[in-house]
Length: 261
Image 1 (spheres, rainbow, N blue to C red):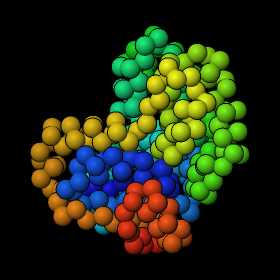
Image 2: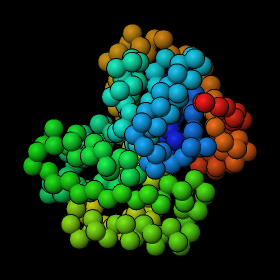
Image 3: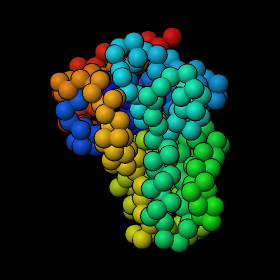
Image 4: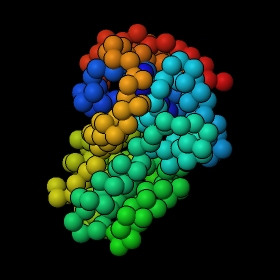
């Protein structure tokens, strides 16, 4: 079983293309909606929450876990990987893609406070190409709007426009959506940004990398069950989670409420 973990709904933007690319495997998705957004928590709490999620998923039988959360990937992943094997993140694959596709070497990153303050994207991109200019902007209000299902309201558009203005003035040619919630506002970002700016979402990139990873590691791939089973867990209201997830994924689900405490 492949486990995916996010602070809430954002990881669904990663799960959706993975299900399309690799539908044969069993998946278990855990959204810690009760404590979303992670970006407003301290690094110590983010690490604690992330480890609780990993331990829970391992206990449920996950053989491979994907941090489908940029905040957890940027703040907690390295510490988690020292304790637990077979845990992957979304940040490095996206940083690698950005370093490949940028034409003018001007990359923008938007994310939660915790992700932006970690400078993780800047660090990873500069490992690949120190000449790339990275411009970052924290957008702390967007995740709460998305978690509430308000991301298509005019207020969300106005806030996004204000956040992105500073990146537009930097004349970026590539924009990283450094939070897996943000693809749910992709139409808004495309309206705001110049058409020449390439916008990178985590989902398709991670799905491609996961497929490559399993091909490189047959010893892990053979441990994964292939019954097309999908299990959904949330730490908050399961009915709300069901409605949001069914609308986004187009799947009929029966989520279970759990506690990570």
